[in-house]
Length: 168
Image 1 (cartoon, helix red, strand yellow):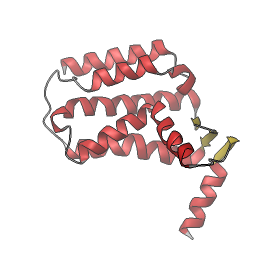
Image 2 (cartoon, helix red, strand yellow):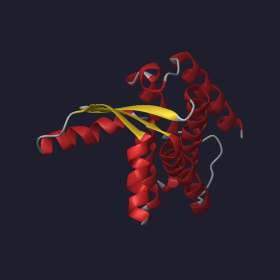
Image 3 (cartoon, helix red, strand yellow):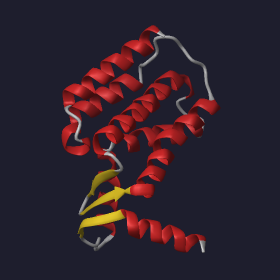
């Protein structure tokens, strides 16, 4: 019964625009690495390393990255509503409705709360990991194309959040 509900939610809340089947292992590998154009995947990867015991000395930077993700998620929700267009290698689809809300909560808010609960030593003015990763991402990817957010807005949000973190 539960699996039927999940399948129905996926079927009702994903609109396929281009669903080209992957033909070999290389396509799956390219599909996996194409996920890294989304900043959330970068932060999820860093969160996994942190929760496994690595990057403990960078708790402040990891907290900074998670807050960037939460703020970005809120901005995307305000601008795009309850749907998000994804391009993953050969596949293009829109996630909408309750499935989008669930994925948004799972990858943005829940991980943020887990990092807060895990805790760590908070060093004032320490953004040695978080700030370069965020700047590198903004230089490497077009936020207007991926999220429909102008690069200037992304940069202003980054500067404001960096200043808050620096002086807090």
